[in-house]
Image (cartoon, rainbow, N blue to C red; front, side, top):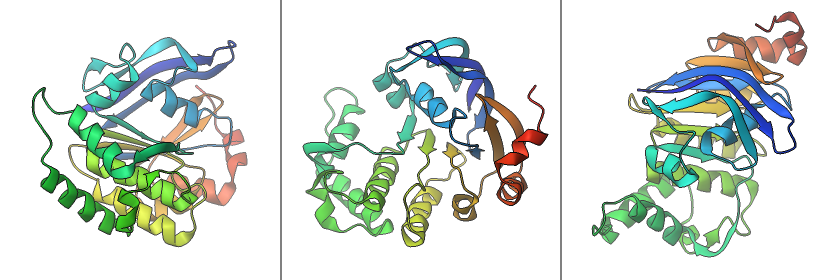
Length: 250
């Protein structure tokens, strides 16, 4: 079981190529991190995997447990087990958190089967407690009026409830203070499983102090230019992104 990206090329609607041959495999049970400077293609990769309509795939493939997902709709990719935690989570006015998550779970049940309300709220409250979220957030509209840290915790709450096969977290640490970062990391670590793969996209080593990756990739100019263990992130932290000048792009 793996999320496999092979020689992936993608461009913007205006023809600007962003991904220039990304090859990456994330087996179930592993946490991979991608680091790199702004404009290297990290967030584009996450959006292409999840099916963002603003990008055109021009070559390559993405398979999830052997099944091609590039021909799937966004909803189909989600149902297949792909979850993307956004760098900037969207607001959904007029829809409460509790109803939003409940509708997502109900949509995944076989036709005619109803979600057990008591079991649902028990699970929801347990996960909110893990993330130190006040119960009042169940009645609030999704992300409306939330602080940056509250939005990020809300994304992790959705992930905990949906239990996807592959979690992609796009700069989840962005805008978080150290206390919020620890709480978010606790929620992410609670998702680690031999049956689940994770891809963390980040600029900074500090996230990886709390969510220990199995593999670290360095991305530059639309390609993966180096792969190693957690020590690679420490090397980047020490040398900065000038370190990329030392690397030879294959």
